[in-house]
Length: 285
Image (cartoon, rainbow, N blue to C red):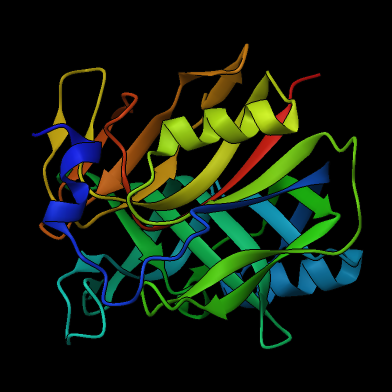
């Protein structure tokens, strides 16, 4: 694998004009929350109901341990037209799935709740992962899930002229000068670790846990494994953290179009963004 940041633009070209702003961030207050979901609900209906009940807006939710009756998901695939450099596979359908780890970002699209979720589970041949179709995922058992609710800014889907995808962007709602967290979105070709560290320095947070999902143009990990595909989706795993202003560990799972799942701690300079990344960093107590 060539030096990722030097070669990412050679490997992948988005159809639109590259935007001047390469990252967007906002300081927020992040409060721990729990949500109770009911057996038989779809993931979308359950999360939306629970958020409505508590009056919550933008939330990063961890779905670890959920038992699913039905799971529909897609994985990265090549483009279907010149409008995009990547697209999604046809939907895959599974039954009776135990979620090992999942991250859901809750925000808004056209005034309605909108969720973006990546999850990891064990299949018959090992790790499996995908981008969940939230209205077609059905809970087998009631579940209590946890996460962080943000105030001070929201995540809102807007058309992106660079990638031609509708993507979450951060919309400030109120000034939060001393919030305990920050929201961050990253544009294509920017280094994941480098951007996290740069923005953490600007915001003034040195130690934090990190939650997030997104996509990279290939990846190289500390265990020596390399994901060569320029098309992928990732989710950060437990233990992702910032220590003294540096990403001491950024464990993640990635899936590419051949359905192979890669796991490891990402190396600095080897995680250029493919389409987007959506992250929440919460300062350590």
